[in-house]
Length: 319
Image (tube, rainbow, N blue to C red):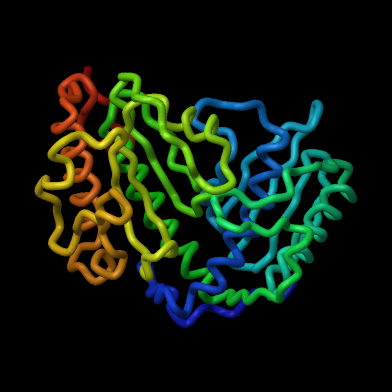
C-alpha cells in the first residue's frame, strides 16, 4: 500500500484555517457518524451515551472493540495511510480508501465491508445533530476530502486528547473518559458534581430529547476541542457548565484571548491563540482549569472532596 505523502504542516500544533478545512471537516463529520452509528447499533446503552464515541488512536480515530457474538470487530480511521480499516477478531480485514466521494458512496462501501467480513450491521440512516439532515443513502452530492487537512485535524486531536487526559487526572469524582462525539464532532471530557440537574430542555436537531436528558441528568462542567462550524469560523477549545450557575460567565478566565461566547453559552479559547502561545500546553491547561473553577465555585461544588493534584507517571496518588 502506498502511504500518503507528509502534509505541509506536520508540527505538533499544525495550522487549521477554517475556510481551508471546512469542506473536509463536513465530509469527515458525516463519515464519522456512519462509523459511530455502527458502534451505537451493536453496543448496550451506557449512561450519558458513553457507549457511542470514537477514541483518538496512534493513527486516527477508532471505535475500540465492538462485540459480535463471541467475537469482536473494530473500525479505525487511519489518517496516515488515509484508509478506514474494518477488522475482526477472526483475522479478517477490509479497507475503505479515504478520498473525495459522496456520503452515500462511503456508506455503501462501509456496509459492504462489514457484510463481507460476516458482521452485517443495520444503522439508523439519518445524521444526528444536523438541521435539514439528508439520509446517508440519499446524500449523493460530491464531497471534498483533503488528506492534508484531515491529518492536521487528527494531529491536533492528539494534543487535545493528551491535555484533556492530563486535566482529567486532577479530579476524584465521576468523570467521563476523553472521547470523540461524532454527532457534535468534538473531543470532550466531562466532570460531574454528583448532584442531579434539572431536566434538559432538549431541542437538539435530530437527537431525541431522552438522549439529551440522559447526557445532562447531573450537574456537569464539560470541556473539549471543537474544529469550528455552527457560526464559529475557527477551531477552539471550549468549556461550559450545565446548568450554568449565576456568575459563571463573568468569572476571570486564563489565558489572555479566552472569552465567554454568549451565542454558544460557553467559554472559548481559539485554537490559534493556544498554538501561537509561548507554551501551548500551559495555555490550554490554564484555560481548562480556570473555566472549571468558574463552574465549580459559582455552583458551590465540594471542590476539596472532588479534586487532587495532577497525576504523574508511575506515582501513586497519596491518600
